[in-house]
Image (cartoon, rainbow, N blue to C red; front, side, top):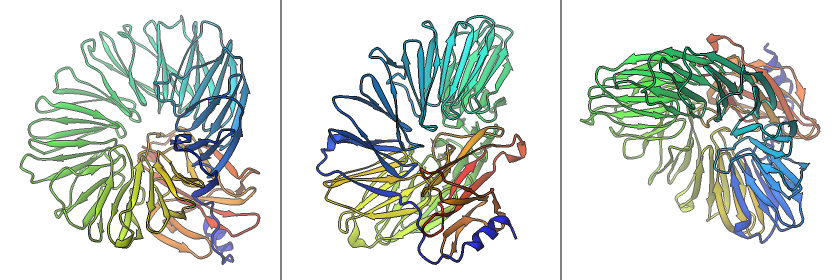
Length: 627
C-alpha cells in the first residue's frame, strides 16, 4: 500500500464534517467609510482611525496594527507598508503579520512609486539598506556605501557599489554577491532579474535562482538592456544577447545586431532583421531560436508568445518550450493572451488555438462559432452562440464542454484567469488546471448576481439571499458565506476579495490553503528545472499533516470524513509527515531536480491535516507546473 493511501485510510475513522480554514473571514468594524478600505494582490485592508486591519489571502486571517497620529501607506501584491515616520510597519501576505523597524526621519523608500513592486520593499536609511520580503515576512539589513546605486522591482533588487555587485531575491530572502573587473557603466532591473555592464562583459542576476552569471562578448553591448518580466536583451555590432531571470542563463547569438529592434514581454524576447528571418529568446528555453517565415510577417509579442502573421499562415513561438509552430491560416485575424493565441482565417471557415505551454496549434470543435474566442490568461471560452460552451486549457489542448441553462452570461477577461458562465440554472467556472468545469446551482430568481473578477479571484453577491460566493483559479473551489450587515462595496483583486458592509469586512481568500509561490499560467510567477521553490500551508496551530503529490484529476474522489481528493489515486506519492507551527503555518523549501525529463510536467499537491482538536480534512488542490 502506498504511504499516502495508508495515511488517508488511517484517518477514515473521522465522521464529522471537515474543518478546513474558511476562505471567507469576517472582521467586525462597523460604520467604516468607503474611503477607508482597499484591496490589492493578496491583501485587503482598512484604517479605522486608531488601527489598521489587514487580511491575507495566504493566511486567511485578519491582523491589527494600532497607531497614533498620521501615516503614509503603500501596498503591492504581497506587502502593505505603514510608514509612521520613525517606525515602518510592513505586513506580509505570506505570514499575515506586521513586522516593524525603527528608522530615522531622513530615511527613503527605494521602490519607485511607478514601478511594479510585488514582493520586495526596500528602505535606505543612511548607510543601512533595509529589505522586506512579502514571502518571507521579515526585515533584513545590510550596509551600503553612500555612492551605491540601488534598483528594485517586483522580486529582485541589485546594489552596484564600484565593482561590487549584490543581488537580493525576495523569493528566497537571500543576498548573492559578485565582483566585476571594473565599476559597471550601466545597470538595471526587471521583475526577476538584474543586470550590469562591465566593458564587454554582461552580468546577470536571477532572483528565482539567487545566482549571478556573466558572459563576455567580442564587442561591448550598445547601451542598456531592453527588459520586461523575466527576459532582458542586448545587442552589439556582432552579437544578440538574451538573459533569463528564471534560469539565470545567457544565450548569445553571433549575428550583426546593431540595427535590430528588440522587443520583450513577460517571458519572451524577439528581434528580426527583415521580417523573414526571426530570432526568438524564451525565459525557460534560455537560448535563441532562429527560424524563417515564407514571406515578410508582422510580429506581436505578448506574455510567452511571439505571433507572426504572414499572408498564408501564422507562426507562433513559445518562450516556454523554445519552439515555433505554423498553422495554415490564410488572411488571419488573431487574438493573443499570455499563454494562448487564437487565429481565424479570412473566410471564417476555421478557428485554431495555440498553446504556449505545449507549443502546438489545435482545431476548435466543429460546433463552435468560427470567431475569435474570448481569451483569459490561462484558458479560452468558446460557444455555439446558445447554451453550449467549451473551456480550452493550454495545459491539455482539449475543449471541455459545458451546457448552461437559459439566459447565459459569460465572465472572462484577458487580464484574468477566471472563466465563468452564469445562467438560470448554475454558475460554472472552468478549472484549467484540472480540465474540468466546477458549478454551483442557481435559480432564475437569484439573478442578477453581482459578480466581480480580477486575476485569479471571482467574488459574487446574491442580493436576494444575502449570500456571498467566491471562486479562486488557484484553489478550484466555490466557497460561500452569509453577508453580515448591509452591503457597502464589493471588489475582487488578484488573489483576494473584499466585501465591505455596515458592520464590518468580509475578506475572501482566492488562494489555496496549500500552495507555492509558483502561479503560472494563472498568474505571472513561473519556475524551471533546477530552481528552488517553497510549499506553504496554513491551518490550525500545531496540526499534524501529510502532504501528497500526484497527477491532478478532472474527477472528484470523495473521501468520507476528509473531503475531496483531486489527484489521480494511482499517481500519489507522500512526503514525510510534519506539523504546522504555533501560528498555524508550515513551509517546506525544495528544489526541482535539474532533469530535462521534468519539463512540461505538472504536479498536484494536497495534504491530509489532523488538528490537535477537531476533525481531519483534505486541503484544497494546488498545482506546480514546470515549463
